[in-house]
Image 1 (cartoon, rainbow, N blue to C red):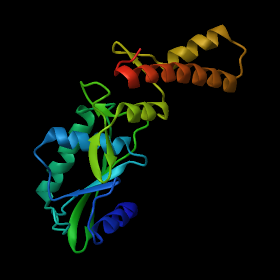
Image 2 (image 1 turned 90 degrees about the vertical axis):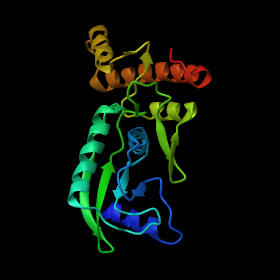
Image 3 (image 1 turned 60 degrees about the horizontal axis):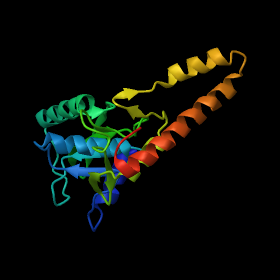
Image 4 (image 1 turned 45 degrees about the horizontal axis):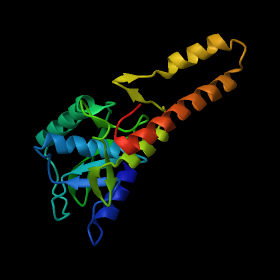
Length: 207
């Protein structure tokens, strides 16, 4: 909560501006697709980010009432679960700023990236740039996948599970130390991922 308040204060100092880590709004938009894009962008942002409700378009804190607060939390939580792949869980808190009661929605950084719109291709992933939400380029999507904490690739809708790869390697190398086994899994997955990313950045298709 302290970090969110510090970011909000920095954002509202003249000239008022939104940050890659924080976006403020007067109330919940009726455009669910755009809301889901914001969630995708913050989940793909290093360190995650915050949506703050109760600040009008001119940057003046107006506050939110109890009914609006509850509806906002529920709708965003549903979008995070049902509108994104992989799904994300959100945190929220209510705090006072400049005598106004504001709602802070925390979108944590996803462990597996890119977080994209459910039912769509990986190219429907979003990022924060210049204080706004925009579509990620193929190169940016590739970079997110390469630095994802759990590397993965897709081929015709099938995801290769790292646990199965590890099991197969254990059978082939029963006396291999755990640290060496982990290194082999990492090398194999990253080599395959790097090859797939080269194809993706050129064609938009995964091998």
